[in-house]
Image (cartoon, rainbow, N blue to C red; front, top):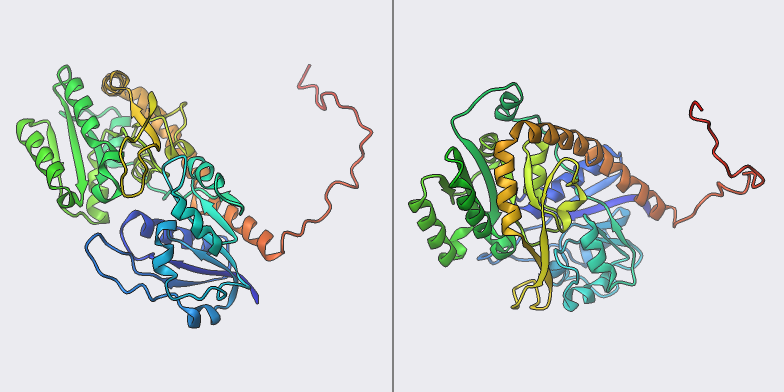
Length: 393
């Protein structure tokens, strides 16, 4: 069987899993890794979908040795519902999983039997899955799209003044609104805004109709506070790009993230960010150029669709969050410089090319059955262990 990759994923959908799948395909292309792609449907909250896309006939027709399955552990029983127990044998099967907690559900751990290894985008995911896995768990971060600085941010760099200072926060109810913590962000903003009349908060909520109670609360808050703008309608990529274009700073007071795509989207546009200093976003949020908000870890406290009551997540510190918002407005030129550093850093370290190179390195090892050449035996061992250069002294 040829070395290369059979890639399975919902790469035409607009949600986070679909976006990541499409970006991962670009990484394969960038690294010149031979591959075939197989489009999967993406289940929605109220849709009935035939999951019989992957079956024994398809598996037996695959061209390459390595399969990459770009869907999360909880979807394995659905996507593999028509795959026989022995159909995947003879292939090297990689699952692309993400989870926001320090432990995965036991049911997910049972799905490891289908895979030879799992790729994860961040250290928190690696820790969670490694605790239950006898298979390799390899960190391959999500690629971060390269974007230019927004026109507003560029104008700010050049000294332009605007009548309003716009904070932006984005969340999806289906991604767990309690985890995304938007009401905390609103409370922190309203406390800060008492002293900064020019400050405004744009709240972009997706799929809020699936939580009528939250929808009612958000609409009432926006009605009472003219410095809060609520956008709860669907927006395509171009409209979201325009939304980022209005922002002077992005905020995410999340309780947990597997990676944090909206945060990386903001950084990729040169927008300063204020974020909880915890979980998957710490893969690319550095304290040297990102305003990290302090937190404590607490139990979730009740069972949720993907989390157990004894799972731990972060509770950001309200006082520090308010201080961060105030500092962002008062010292925005400084944070713009830091954001530019962050923007350049992720372009270097999380580009499609860079992540593609990580993929190629791992795929080549797998393709070579983890054979390693000897790169040490010809080195001399009787040498000075001191400093090899004088550094000008």
